[in-house]
Length: 166
Image (tube, rainbow, N blue to C red; front, side, top):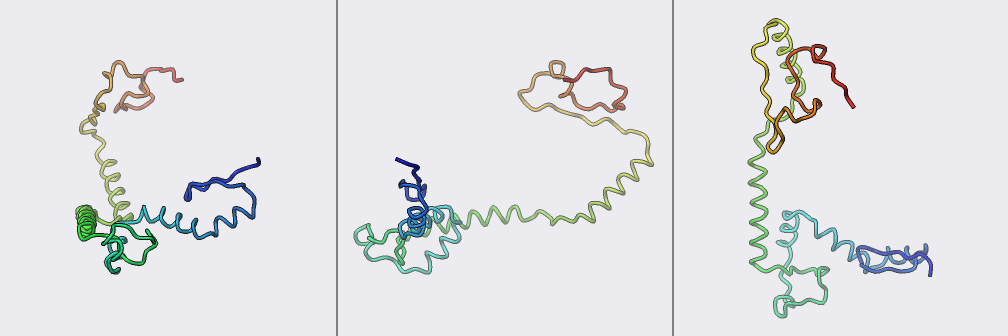
């Protein structure tokens, strides 16, 4: 029987040789199927911009079907579909606007602040208070955890008792 090639875009298989594969990949049906697959994942704003420039398809509006399908140069979206698409685009813009208050990354300023903090911590050798750690919800108590999962101590690592790892 020989090897067979299965095309995920077209959902069909054929004998796998150079001639057949090349003929299929350059074929109109494969190109349309591949375009339809990638169009499925397009951003809503792109789809809205494209659909607003198209005129409505009379055949699709009258009968609910069009012989050209997704390859039709006219729009198959109803007014309600366009309104839903606009709402999706607006919702996404609002989400982006809410997250746009994040300041831009400035590495130079961050490094300067880091040096200042290190200098100030070296000057004050007094440890104010140890950091507090809390275990995630659902974890067993600290006494039941292995040593590798215990929070770090404030003392030097050499001061810890001899532990066997591994």
